[in-house]
Length: 336
Image (tube, rainbow, N blue to C red):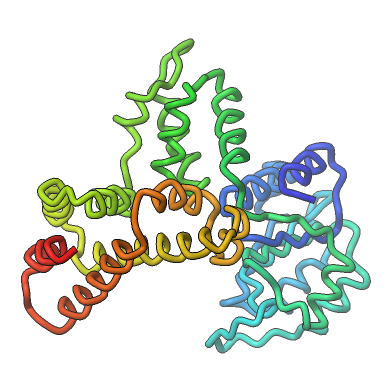
């Protein structure tokens, strides 16, 4: 079951005793949590809601709490966060977890407790006994990254819920400026709703004025200027980023990452991979792949390779010499 289905069931009070939330989408995980919290009356929240971070406290604390009856109420919510022991990840921590206690609880959960295990990871270690048991006993909520169309629908719904509308070109710009981060997009929606009067639509100009570009997006624009050989404009943009106190090494690293992605996408595209297959192969959000596919046909493979190698050289010089970063960038532009 996906997050939206789970939220509807929670609203209808069709609850499971144990939930396993699996996936990395932060906004949806927060929405799920908000709807679960609404199940507990305000006067009971201090007594019947508990959260445990497995990187700081032992699992036994959370299980003991889950096994105790609610205090002055009908139901208790217990959240287990960062359960890294369900993955192959190794953590340097002094906290010891006794997994047999969780195994025993999964066999006989308390009817008055709703236990929520937030496994906000891309995958679990399927070889582990506890993971196999969880998948048998818990209600799994798939919290995977959304595609662009799903993100659009959620944004439109939020505007509609506040009796607002957004133009299609404004929506496209909003998604472009917030990229794959749904949580960031929804924060910007809140800002736009506050700044729009009743009956008005959110238009392109309003989004352009109120939603800032991130450093990554500015660098993405810089990639276009580099590949289009617009040297003067590229230098001006680079200079403006430096004036905004962006670290030259960080700018170079993002540029390097963008060219690496363009190269990988171009190679896989030539081999016949479709957008979805490229995203899963590279483990990159589909929206970033979509943007990369728009660019690669405009540029030759050699251009991408030369730019990538030039940026690798720049990174080495920035780390090993005291040469001026802007001068290095200028020389880089001249070489390619």
